[in-house]
Length: 111
Image (cartoon, rainbow, N blue to C red; front, side):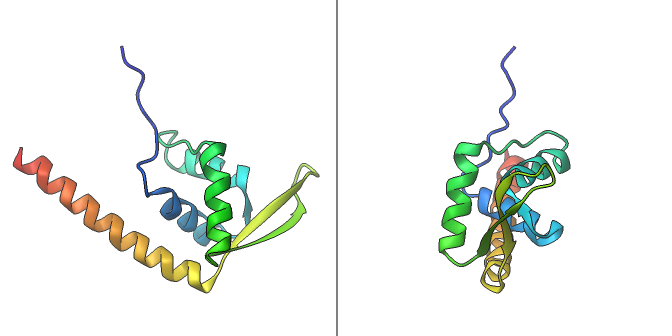
């Protein structure tokens, strides 16, 4: 039996990360991945190799603010918060996802 894929569709990582931080507040990378996995009922898994470059890009683009702090386990980590530009990008990402979802639904209904 083939293993079910839980790869995140290309282009949705920014949406998931921005939405997570917007909803849950300031978070470090591991907490972001754990939140997405937990909220999706284990259907989605964000790999570190995808997450950290994406967080870096989003911070460079001004969508997130990053700062070093100590985790609940007393480790140093970068914590991310969403910026005003990030909230605007989140709106655009949600609109884009809605269009994609509608297009896929139309194809599925037609077939």
